Structure formats: structure tokens, C-alpha cells
Length: 416
Image 1: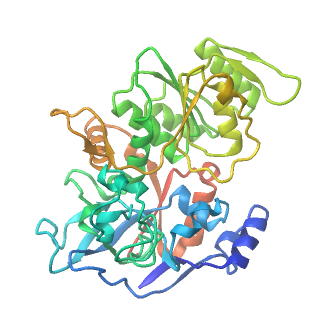
Image 2: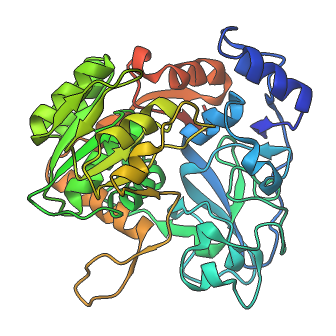
Image 3: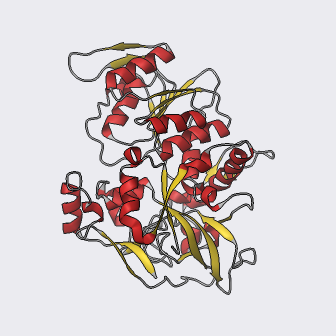
């Protein structure tokens, strides 16, 4: 089968990391850490696993971070190479093992929770994180019946969505409702991340929320906050007009599109009733500000802005995957007694259900997608670039430059 694989090579990684920003195409060229090549389909690791044929598979910010060699080496001990990329996908079950639960049959459309926790690895009893339903924080990601890896798409045993075949444990599977198209279902995994991030905040109606960054994860965070019943007025900061237009469609009350830092501060503080002040050196300082800020960029600049703009006792939720943030002044964290909350992946949520029980984030994301569709929503419009695997350089180029290219979510159409 054809697959896009990530090859571990320290010299190439250092070359791309050092020159990727100035040498266009280096991250996907012949000296990159990825290749489109023939690969053997992964074997079923245990008799209860299934084989899935991806139909659509999205390009995630974490994929771009890996390919562009711009992320932190923090995760390097927790992957096994060569791995096939792709963890956002909708696919069809093609094969089931002899011990696969009867509910999972060939021909069913499914989406995957990519976390490779204790249940996936055949480890009993589960670690404390998995026992609590937070298997994205599994303590055994280097143990068990498969190679090391935090997620499908970063583990050589499972394969990934940027291919025609991968394997998955039944605990990772969710059946796609019949009323969702493939274009909508492929959003389920990144949307679940946005739902998890949105649920970190209070959703009071007398508050202000600011979303920094209106790429796909920022836009989905706006939608997730609204669909979860959030009542705060949402301000959104977008770099491009098409992002601003979509932010309004998905529920932002007001959107700022100017790129100047001082202008952004003035706009936010004018809306929230605070004031802006200029120190002797550096960026402005704010008094007042939004009660919660979702940083959906993850750069040093955006984190620094979020800390400066947040109201005293406010909450900053880091939804965007950070690289190695530089230039962050942490003084506001101490001075304003802020809470900074990471939002990585998902598991189970303490979200209000009819019987008061917890619910899986992915199940909630699928339900929210259906609600959005019934209400004539716009989430489905986010999938606005599709490419065959053979055109991966074009696809990745659009994803790397999503703002300028007009892309929201770029996906691969497998089998084309």
C-alpha cells in the first residue's frame, strides 16, 4: 500500500528545523523526514483488533509540527518509527479478528480515538490515568502488545490515516451516525479536542471569552463553546478575512482582524471595559480583560498576549499545540493570579447528561456535529480542501499556509 511515513533521522530533522522557515518546500522535499512509499499493511496485534480502511484523513497541527520539525523534542521518547502519519480520520472496517466484539462488523463507518492507552495495549489492571478515563495520559505508552506511541499516527505498530490500511482496538472505535457525511465525520477527532478545550472554562452569561487564532482549531473551539451551552460573549482574533467570516458563522459575537498588537489590545480592552497601559519597554499591559482566553495558536507571542490580556483571576486555556514558546513574560501569571490550563486530547467529560453520568468526549463531539447539522450550521464547511495522497506536497503546502491559501481543514481522499 502507499503511505506517508515519518522516518527518524536526526541530521534531516536538524536541517529542516534550521532551514525550513527560509527554504520553501524543504519540509516535504527529498531531504525531509517524510516519504510517500510502499509499505506493508500493519498486522492485527491481537485477536480482538480490527482493520480500518481510511476514507478521509485530516492534516493536524501536530502533524505539521512533526513534518516541519518545529515542535519540541519532548515527545520523541514516546513515538516509534517509522510511523505512518494521520490520526484524524473516518474509515470503514474491513477486517475483524476472531475475538472482536460482535458490535464491530466489516462495512461499518467509524472514527477513531487515537490515544493508545492501557486497554489498547492489553494491559491489566489499567494505570491510574486510564482507570479514570483519561487514557490520553496513559502511563504505559511504552509497554504492552504494541510498540511505543502516544497515538495512532505516531506508532509503527498501528499504521495511520495517511494510507489505505490501519489497525485499531475496539476501545478506540465510534460508529459514525448515518446522518453525518464523511466530510462531517472526519472533523470528529479535532472537534473532540476543541470540545475538551472549551469545557475547561466556565460558561457564565456575564463573562467575556477571547479566542486567539481562527485556524481550524480556533474555529472549532468557538463552535464547541456555543454548542456546550457557553453563554459568555465571544471575541475572536483572526489574521485573515475568511477566518473572521467563518468565526462569525460559528458563533463569535465580534471579530478582530487587524494584526497589530497594540490595536488588538485596545480593541479587547474597549470591549471588556478594561484599560491599556504602556510600560517603558515591551508590549502593552492590560488592567481588566476577558475572563477566559482560549489560545488556539500556541506560539510564544500568542501565549504572552493571552497572559497580558486576561482579567485578574482569569483562565488561559492552551488549546493550540505549542512548539517551544519564546519571549513569554510570565509576570502577569503571578500578578493577576491567573490559571493556565493545558487542553490535550480528551477522554471522558463531566458534562451534564440526562442521567448525570459522564460522557466520552468523542461521543459528545459527534452529538454536537449532529446538532450543528440539524440547526443548519457551518462546521461542515471547514473541510474545504481535498487531495489524493499522491498530491501530498500540495496538500501540506496548503495546510502549512492555511491562512494565505484560504484553507480551514485540508484532508486526504484515500483511494484517489
